[in-house]
Image (cartoon, rainbow over all chains, first blue to last red; front, top):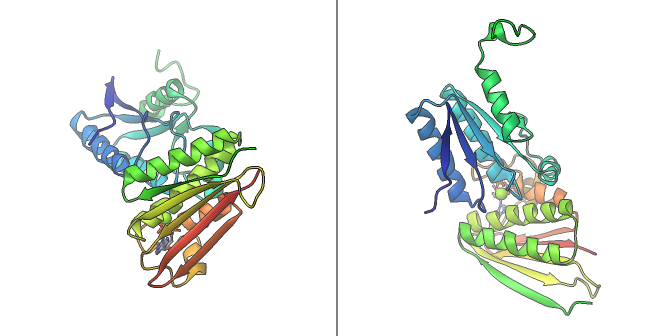
Length: 131
Length: 134
Ligand SMILES: Nc1ncnc2c1ncn2[C@@H]1O[C@H](COP(=O)(O)OP(=O)(O)OP(=O)(O)O)[C@@H](O)[C@H]1O
Ligand SMILES: [Mg+2]
């Protein structure tokens, strides 16, 4: 079976879903990402769904699983690029994805992952500690 | 006005489900339904097609246009010959699942496509029809 490629960018894993995501493929991605997070000791996972035309209950559940699994393995997950029509549909479907961390695009998602890695003391207004 | 047409697609595998989604999308695009309408119809089709696959042991999806002698619109009928649904109201309610799912598919599809009909008889199978009019 085909697999969705997972890229290592610095200490983060990057996945861009560019194919029609059938159910087995979604489950394979969930397994592959979980394995890869441990293997490369990734600190974060970024999933770009800007090419996904729908998110139904199954795909939504898989995205939620990925977030929960990566959290259990000490990494953060961010989902980026959800289309407005997809967001509207998800709400009407009744799917609660509020457990997902989301960002507008890959750049912002990466920035979010980096921010999440900063020690708590240096987060917020205290910029001088970092410089 | 477009001539009447129909297309019946099998639902026996995950790949079949993707093909049904693609066909519904293509018909919606052809009739100039907007992006939100397209997305709702395709998402509802995905839920109903998966149910036919998972609970109905496979089945088919039939696309038809126009609907009721109108000038357009799309009707999709999902049919399987599985165990059927004994309590339809319960199956439609949010959170009810016998398969470890979220229990959102059936009720969610009805919320997404208001014109929704379901017929099911224990031991006979299930038929769900969703329609969007022009
Ligand atoms: N075609 C069908 N044949 C037999 N039973 C069905 C069929 N479709 C739905 N059901 C029953 O209705 C229940 C609710 O379906 P629904 O699609 O809402 O939730 P689900 O498939 O269990 O989970 P989800 O769709 O959220 O992943 C199913 O668990 C199943 O028991
Ligand atoms: Mg379902």
